[in-house]
Length: 266
Image 1 (cartoon, rainbow, N blue to C red):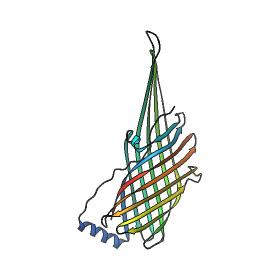
Image 2: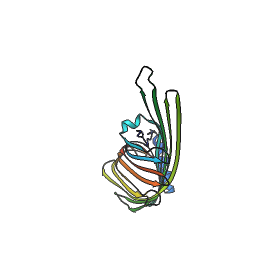
Image 3: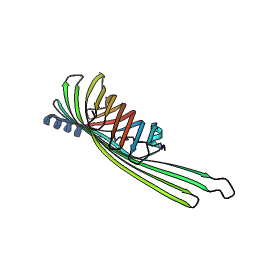
Image 4: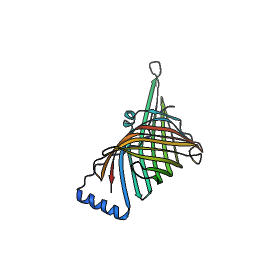
């Protein structure tokens, strides 16, 4: 059985305006404490390809573009946060999404009193992802390089219901499954200014190592434009792949697409 569906993070970008007075006060406070902060809500238009299977649920094959995804997305949020002091930084990332997909089919038999057989399927998938990492700045200057180490936590909840009827007989089958795991990962992040107000951002990590997922990796390449000391626009391309298979649950998925965000610094 094949049901086209989605599992995609979608963040809602927020616009925040501030007068120069509060912004300068925040910057001054950050300098005095030695801490700096960056909060970035963003939108990721990711296509997906892979498969999911859980217990008695049917294998779900997925191959969808972002336009297909928008047809099925019920809710989704994503946001990233960074706190930094000196060479050390704390990186946080949070994702939530809920999707639904359904399919129906019917067939009428031959004859004047042809029996009608029908079947319907409904699938709901919810995914929550949290990532927390420490970053250490190996090199300072115009092109700072950070070494990153952390854990990415994933929770997948899937529910499927199949209803069928033939003539006067009908029946329903419902199955559900939940799975959560954490993947350790290590990575590198480079920031390279290349023009006034413009910065190239490159990031990559690998993880899993058989602790939970067999293997997972992420790559990001983007640019940032500094509107002011407090606001920066961010855009680029991001790819994440996860290959997990334990205890009857298999999640082999790749996400890739453009992202757009707004960084608020204080």
